[in-house]
Length: 236
Figure 1 (cartoon, rainbow, N blue to C red):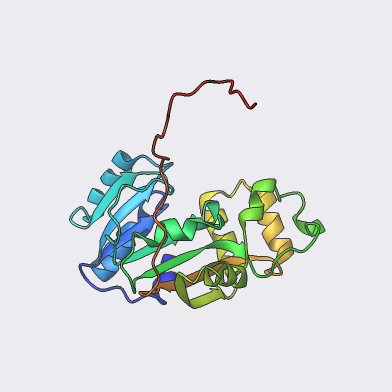
Figure 2 (cartoon, rainbow, N blue to C red):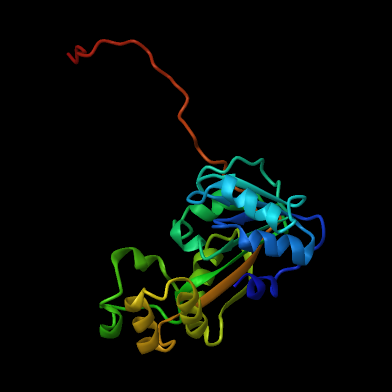
């Protein structure tokens, strides 16, 4: 997925890249070794100490920097990054209507934001298709089609969406991944085999931050304005 996503990005040596939701950091290592970029490998669930060991073993310690952080509380300065990518992670938090306004402030004007991951080839309207019901759980409603992501981003006016598409035979690559990583997950594998790409697949989207758009500053707290006053007031 990382290789597929980077086909739609213009990454150059020494660019600063945020790899958001990097997992075990393999995508971050790939980005550094293939493109010579500096990568801040951020994840909430995976231990940055373990990721750092993996980075050093890959001889990428000069350009990959593991962090633990929540996607909604990133410890970076505005416009610090030249590009932001997210591999198989963005759908966990990016469906929030307000999230793009928060994230986009960390990339320079004109810089790209690119995502790739599990999704839908078409939106599910109404009930979940019968062949997916044994696998489908409520949290899977965060999965969406490439066109959904295009609309979701375009309506904000923050990004100029350049790419929103589906990986041909992505469902087969999804099965390949499971057979390598989690062959015992027969429920999901069977759902993919029965679906054969009718609904399930891999999607990507790439947008570029519009230089003319002024982003709303996030509100972290309301300034105190307490004035002592009686609890009961005379209204007569």
